[in-house]
Each structure stands twice: as C-alpha cells, then as structure tokens.
Length: 266
Image (cartoon, rainbow, N blue to C red; front, side):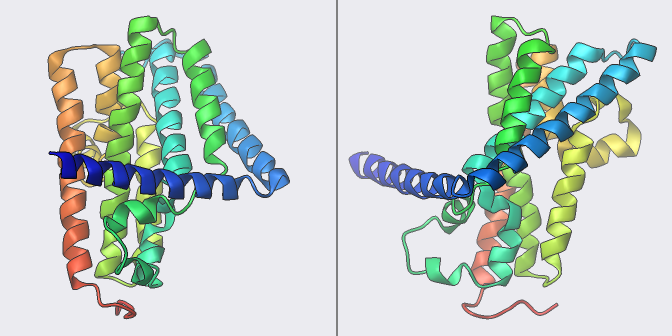
C-alpha cells in the first residue's frame, strides 16, 4: 500500500509542477492574456444574451426554462475552462502525436498522457471559468444544495470532456489528418453541449450520447442538478467512467503501435 501511495504522490507532484509551469507561462504576456480572457468573456456573455432574448418570447423549450439553460451554460463554461487551464494540452494532443512530441517522454516516468495534458494552459480558458461562475451565481438560481451538485456536475463533465477529446486525438495514431479532425469533433461536441437536452430525440439523441458524447459531458451532469436522484447520478458517473475507460484503452492501443520519430502515414 505504501509504495502505491508513494507512486500516486509522485504522480500528483509531477503533474502539479508541470501544470503550474504551464499556467505561469500563459501569464507571461499580460496584454495578450487580458485580451484573450476578455474576448472569451464577451463571447460567452453574448451567447447568454441570445438565450435571454429567446426566452423573452418563449417561456420554455421542452420543459427547460431560462434558469435551466443558464445552469447548463454555467456548468459547461466552467468545466471547459478548467480543462483548458489545468489540462490545456488536450487542445492539440493530436498534434503532439503527429509532430513527435511524445518522443521526449518515452524514456521518462509515465503516464505520458497526463504529462501531455499538463504541458499547456490556455489563457482564454480563464474567461470561460469567470463567465461560468458569474452565470451560476446570478442567473442559475442555485441554492446551497444545487451549488454542491453543480460542482459535482462540473467534475463529472470535465472527466467526460477530457476522455472524449483524448479519444478524438488518439485517431492521430492511425491517421495523419486527425489533427484538424479531432479539433472539429471536439468543437462540435462542445456546441452540442450548449443546447438543452430536450431538443434532442431519436437519432440525434443517440449521436449526442455516443459519437459526440455531449450527453455525458453536459446533459447527464446537468440533469443531476435539475432533478437529483441516484439514477441520474449513476448515469452521469457511469457515462463519464465508461468514456474514460475507452479513452485509456484507445490511447494505450495507439501508443503501443507508435514508432518513435515516425510520422503517421495519411
């Protein structure tokens, strides 16, 4: 047990050191940092305003009212921002594979995936966190219990989001064109995540819970906040856990076939 705890402590320490270094680097250009954060906050605020205008004319959509959508956007913004700040390497993980950035890590202590995720921090992601917290505080109508559930939803959604983007990025082990494809898939998944779950049905709902798992990134975690139950918790946690297992499996398979210094043929 003690060696296992020592290994875990060493892993957390190594991750924290690399993540903090990446965050400090993102602060290096203060002007650029401020511009990126401000631009993201304006972008997110504009999206919320559109929903305010929508609900000024329509009181609800499929049982979802403005506070529900505000809660959805707040949770999505915070989990997306937290992923970008603390695991920003996910954004170009496919590029790290295709450009051989893995090579330098092959002889270093594992896990390689965690080190790649921690190697970058996205400045604009702070804007997502800030706007998400403001939305949750002032627009989502959260009481203390709902605030605790929202935190749980953010953690669950973050795990599902990082697992999803890892699966997309791992396509680069097999296809040279996966760099742009993985980003497009991730961006589309994020877009799908910002709409109320009630608008999806039939095959669109199937896609939202499988190929583009926005259902487990946002819909299931937010449903845990809207209508708390053990069933909702099991679906949210089980979905995120399943995608995390798939992500680790796909990554491990890809890494096993990776040849040091060799580009993937497309």
